[in-house]
Length: 92
Image (cartoon, rainbow, N blue to C red; front, side, top):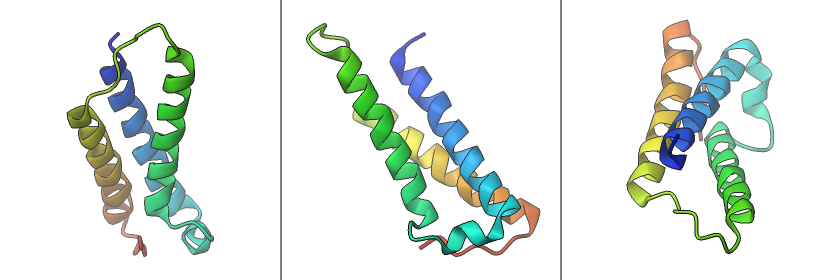
């Protein structure tokens, strides 16, 4: 499986998990880190692991279009899950 597809699946999982956490644990939105940054930090960790594994092997990096698509998927899921559950969430 191409690394781009793995990244998109990872981004969808991160968005779904973030949305579910916002629904199931309402106090989580009042932590020191805003929910928006949960997605950014997880994507940063994915990129760091990919960079560490790639090393000098020359594995193809993730394209910017895939990165943006993954981020948008994660943010959309993080927004839509609480909205469909009827929970009002402060994102920023």
